[in-house]
Length: 353
Image 1 (spheres, one colour):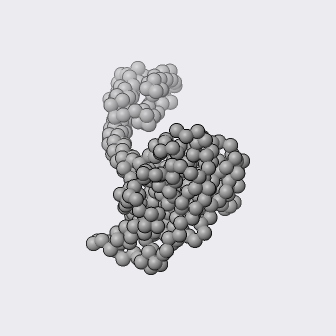
Image 2 (cartoon, one colour; image 1 turned 45 degrees about the vertical axis):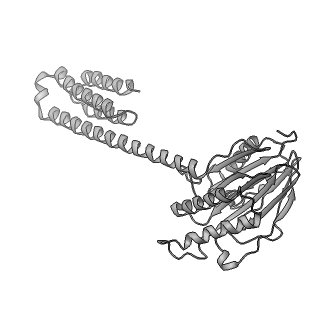
C-alpha cells in the first residue's frame, strides 16, 4: 500500500518537470500523505508527508534553482508541511480512539461471557446449540437472556426478554440469570422456581437508589424442565413466545394452557403458575427463542412466520439447524434485525450418550 503514494509522488514530479512552465502540478502532492493516512499510522504518514515536501523542492530546483526561494514554491512547501502535520495528528488521535474502542469491545465481550455464558454442546443427554443476534452491529449484549442448569434428574433452561433497552435491561437480565443459576439446581418445583424468579425481579425494584418502576419493569420468560429419562417436558410460560417442537420435519407450536404474567408483575397480578406438559421424544428438536425472531419484518412489514418457515426442515443437528435459521431470518429481513434475538435448539438424540 505504501507504494501507491510513493508512485504518485514520483509521477507528479516527472510530469511537472516535463510540463510547460505555465503548468504547476506541485499542489497535487498533498494527495500522497492524505492517501497514506487512510491505511497507515502516524509514522508512515509523516514519512510520506516529508517525502512530498522534498519532492516539491526537487520540482523547484529542476525547473529553476532560483524558484526554490520564490513566494509560490515557499507557499506550496508551507502548505504541504501544514497538511502533513495535520494528518499526522489525525492519525495519532485515530489510533488512540481505536485502542479505546478495542478495550471497550473487550470489556463488552467479557461482560457477555459472564452474563450470557455460552451453552455447552452437551448438557446431560441433550445436544444443545445457542445463538445471539444483536440488532446493533457493535452490540454484544442486550436485554435478551438464556441460561441452563443441571439438576439431579434433568436439565432446566430459561429464555427471556427484558422490557426496554440499554444498560438497565442488561442489569435486569444479569439479575434474573444470577437468581436462576442460584436456584435452578435445587430440588424445588417449577412453580416454586418461577415464583422465586418473580420475587427476585420485584425485590430489585425496591432496592435503595432504584426508582419506582412497579408495573413498568418486567421480563417475559419461558422455563422448561427436561428430564434425562422419559419423553415429557414441563414448562411454565410467563408471557413469552411459546416454544416449537420439530418432529420429522413438522413444526408444532406449544401454546401454554394457562400462561402466567411476565416476571416482575407478581405483586400486581398475584399469579398462580400452571405447569404445562408436552412430548419431547428421541429425535425431536426443541426450539426456544425470543420475540426478536417472530417480530422481525420484511420490506412489506410482514412478521417472520417462524413455524411455517421451519416446517419441512430435516436438520437434526442443533448447530446446523440454527445456522440455517439464521440465514433464513436475515435474508427475510434484508440483513438487519430490528431487535435482539436469541435462539436455542435442543435435541434429544435417538441413541443415548
